[in-house]
Amino acid sequence: MIKPEPDLALVVREIAEEMQARSDRGDVAGYIPELARVDPNAFGMVVIAADGQIAAGGDSEQPFSIQSVSKVFTLTLALGKVGDRLWRRVGREPSGTAFNSIVQLERENGVPRNPFINAGALAVTDVILSGHQPREALGEILRFMRFLADDVSIVIDEGVAGSEQRTGFRNAALANYMRSFGVIENPVDFTLGVYFHHCAIAMSCRQLAMAGRFLAHGGRNPETGHNVVTPERARRINALMLTCGHYDGSGEFAYRVGLPGKSGVGGGILAVAPGKASIAVWSPGLDASGNSHLGRIALEALTRRMGWSIFGA
Ligand SMILES: NC(=O)CC[C@H](N)C(=O)O
Figure 1 (cartoon, rainbow, N blue to C red):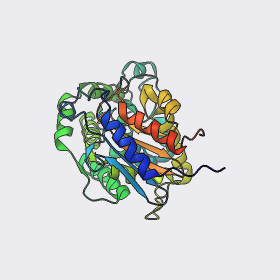
Figure 2: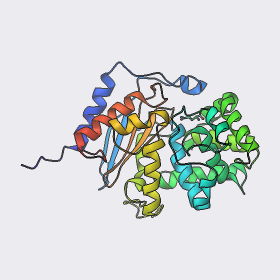
Figure 3: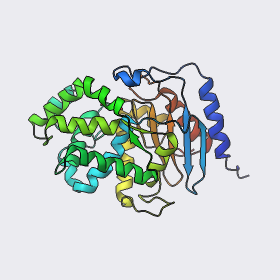
Figure 4: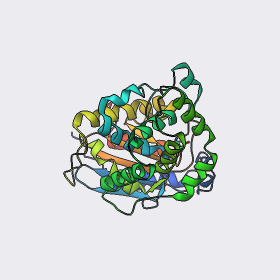
């Protein structure tokens, strides 16, 4: 007997209700003052299926700080700008260290392990910035997000950006250290400014799931028909998300969820079920690796109930 496809809308609503009822929520990111004030009880989830069906649950329309989820999109832009030359400045291996770790950089001559840890994302941002003023580079990133999500209302939360600019001493240390090796080429303050601002882009789960659609469908947005990247590039970005998208929790995420995913300390996760769906989830409480605690649990429930893990049922 063939098992019927589970009802996606129902599954997402059920998961949202289950998550909202849980008391284990993790801890909100305390090191960025503006994020420390976010309500830990928020939870939202949006799944956009291949046919365009949108299944939503919880606080799916509430904008949150996408933080490191932005690194998927800056990586896409930087690859579009310099292609494989990007890999001279950043590696493609999981780090096995915290997202803001400093020790590995010294051992590896200022070349960050991958584009998703902070050091790697700073190097990627620096590539986008080269040849531009910070304002122009930021405009390019924001325009790209609006284009992908098909939504001009997406903005940068200046309060969050300013908050990080005042307190991001560790990122400043990473950037200065890389500058000493020539891995960062622009004035460090410029690169940091663009980085803090793209991390401070605010989006809802629906907007984020929209923006991720090209990754689920071989580089092409099935709705607009826009080819954003080649199928090969989409596949490779997904591979990096699977192996590096959750820092030192990437193995656990692959083990439990089985999808390429990218987290941010705002509590958002973008996950990609190739050929099937683009998924965004948000719950501000984090686990010890700095990834959304309930976000991961919700995604695990989704892939189990839908049979969507890339490794099989
Ligand atoms: N993991 C994250 O989301 C970190 C991003 C944050 N803006 C930082 O640089 O610390």
